[in-house]
Length: 251
Image (cartoon, rainbow, N blue to C red; front, side, top):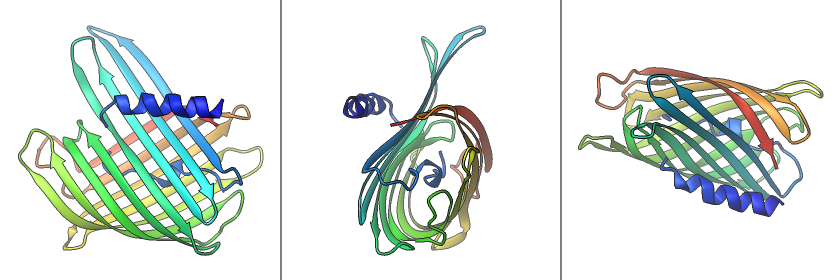
């Protein structure tokens, strides 16, 4: 059953071409002993006004663990369209490898591909490596700090502008999980250019997940992103935010 679901998701997700700063920490799996775990959040909406709109959103996380190795694959797809026009397309694919050195220290390597048409990002490719410290590696709660160096290739939508930059990515993440209570997670990212510190991105997210059944939950999340130098389009703001909710399936 797990293999069939995995293959189905693997074929569905790439059918859509893939936000600014991606909250990887909120999508990590719980620290359990399962070798393979996954989580799927899927929503579909139809709205009828003067035109019929379709909205599709998919968040997939899969994790493979065999100590001291951990492989994490994440994808996010947001797609809004009508029968004749495409209004919005955004999302990412993210692959991350962790090598555990101790209960508190990890090496990290990642690659990521992003698209965000509403923010005028046609292609963004990231590759990075760094370290991760787990200050409180408890089964139910955790507190982490990580820092990485990453190379960024950024192609602006409908403009002949390409950025090639090196950035730092530093984050602090916390998860609080109490028996029979919602799971609370939060993360803050700071990502400056190493050659121009005034060019930075700052983001934060807080999320609550309520358990409905053994494999089914309901989550509410709020995120804020600030980009000091967004794309060269006066219509794109430096500050953006998003509030989402939906069901998630763990497999």
